[in-house]
Image 1 (cartoon, rainbow, N blue to C red):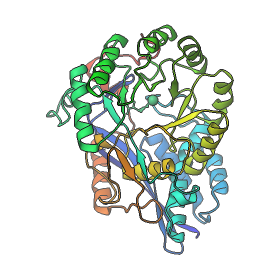
Image 2 (tube, rainbow, N blue to C red):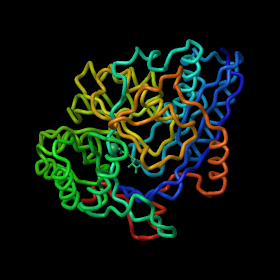
Image 3 (tube, helix red, strand yellow):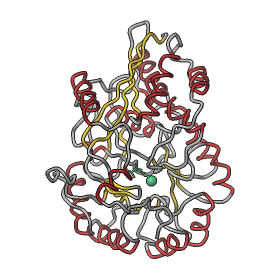
Image 4 (cartoon, rainbow, N blue to C red):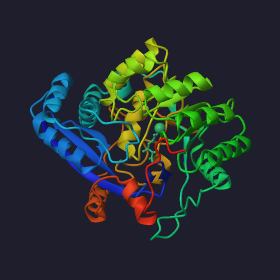
Length: 418
Ligand SMILES: O=C([O-])C(=O)C[C@H](O)[C@@H](O)C(=O)[O-]
Ligand SMILES: [Mg+2]
C-alpha cells in the first residue's frame, strides 16, 4: 500500500457573515481537500485549512510522501517535520498561538486521515475501528450559534436572518434545533460587551430550559471580567470557553470563580499540557484533529487527558463533510469525549465535496457512517465546482479582521478587551 500520487485541491464555499472576537467571516470559507492514491488502487481523503501559506506546505509535503507505505505514519510525520521549518499559523488567532510543533501537526493531519481512510477501506472496517472501535454509534454535536448580520453587506440577506440581540439568537437556535435536532447550545461570544452576552445566555436558558449552554468569547475578556461573568452565569453554563488569554490567566479565572473552563486556545499542543495541569487552568480540553496532528495523535492526547482528569469536547472551524466524517470517527472511538462536539456544518448549508447520504443528523447526533474507511465518497463535480469558486473568489487566506475593517475601520481584535 505504497503512496503513488497525492492530489491537493483548494476549495471555497459560501459562508455567512458570522461575527467573532477577530472580526467577521468573509463571504467564502477556504478549505483544502487531500486525496492520497496507493499503488494497489485505493484512495483516501483528508481535509484541512485553505490558507495559502498552509496550502503551500501541504503541496510541498505531498511530493515528499510519494513512495511511502500508508502504515508508516511515523516516517510520514518525520518527513513533514523536516519540511515545515517555519511556523505556519493563521491570521485570526482563534485557535491559539502558532509554533513549529503545531504547524507540523496541522500539515500532517490531512495525510494521516487519508492514510487511515485507505487502511480502513483495505481492511473493510470503519476508521473508528482503527482507533479502538466505537464506544457510541452516533456522535452528538451542539447548535453553534453566532451573532451575525442579515447578510454580507454587498449581498442579499441569507436565510439565517439577523442575530445581534437575544431575540435573534433565540430564533437562530430554534432554527438550528428544528433542522438538526441539537440538544446542546454553544454561543460564540466576544462580540459585544459582556453584559449583552450574559443577557443572551439568560434568554437562551429561558427559551430552552434544561439544554446545556456554553459561551466562548475567544479571550475577549480580562481576568476580572471573566471572574465576574463566570459568577453571574454560575449554574447556567455547562462550561465557559476561553474567557481570558493564556494558561496563567485561565488559571486565575478558574481559581477565583470556581467555574468549569474549557479551551481551544491556551492548550493547543501537547507541550502546553503539563503547565495547564500544574496550574489547574482548565477542566475541559477541546480536541481538534486538524491541529492536534490527526486522529491517532488526538486519541493519544485524549488518553493522556483521561489519565490526568481532564474532560474532553471538540472544536471546529468552517469545514466540509470529509472533516465531519473524521471528527465523527474520532469522537465515536474516544470514551472520555463526553460533551457534544462543535461543528460549523449548519453554516455550510448543504454545500459539500462528499456525496450526500453517508452523513446525516439524527436528534443532533451524526451516526458513524456505515461504509469502510471514513465512509464518505468524493463528489468530483462538486470538488471541481468548489475549486473554480476558490480560483474566482480572490481570497487566499481567512482574514476576519481585514474584512471587518472594510466596514469598521477602527475595529481591533478583542483580546482582553473588556
Ligand atoms: O471555538 C472556537 O474558538 C472556534 O470555533 C474558533 C472559530 O474560528 C470560530 O470562532 C469562527 O468560526 O469564527
Ligand atoms: Mg473556542
